[in-house]
Every structure is written in structure tokens, then in C-alpha cells.
Image (cartoon, rainbow, N blue to C red; front, side, top):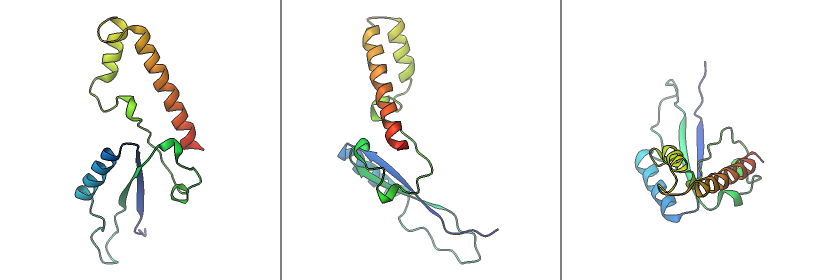
Length: 127
């Protein structure tokens, strides 16, 4: 089978300038911008380029040329708590044990708002 040099781009959108800069620094350290060259006889491994975007994901235009060949999408809203260990356990515990940190209504309200935002982000991503 023939292999071509394929480059994939991951667009990482963040509204926070410092997090965006941190991502850029980490990607520069972890993934050099130019992959090692190989002879034509060697199989070319796919490369991945990460492009941090400082801005609001919901304000990105779905018709932007950069996104015309998107094949996969990962949405991880910063408010999701996905980066916090045992976050879902804390929410369930607080819902079951009122006055632990947040009362049950506060937890339900937060989860409803989070769910609505994630649906909005997903609809925007799929447009």
C-alpha cells in the first residue's frame, strides 16, 4: 500500500489568553513544527499540528476555510469540570447531601445551564 505524508490539524479554541499561550508553549515543546524527513522509500507517518485559537468557540464562523475538512470534533467546555478529579462524584454527593457545599437546587441549576451550553456548542460545531 502506498502512504502519503498526511498532516492533521487540531484547532484548540480557548477564550482565555493565558491558557491559549500555555497550550502553544507546550505544543512547541512536545511537537516540533517540522517532522523529521525520511527517504521516499520509508513509510511517512502522519503528523499532527495543533493550532491554538484565542477566542470564543461560539463566535467562530462554520464557513471559515480552516474548518472545511473537519472530520472529528471534541468539545470540552471549560465549565464542564472534566479536568477536575471526581467532579461528577462531588456533584452527586452535594445533590444527595444538601448543605455539603451547594444545595440541591444550586447543583440542578448549574447542571441545567451546563447542559444547555453544551447543546448550544454542539449545534454550533455541527453547523
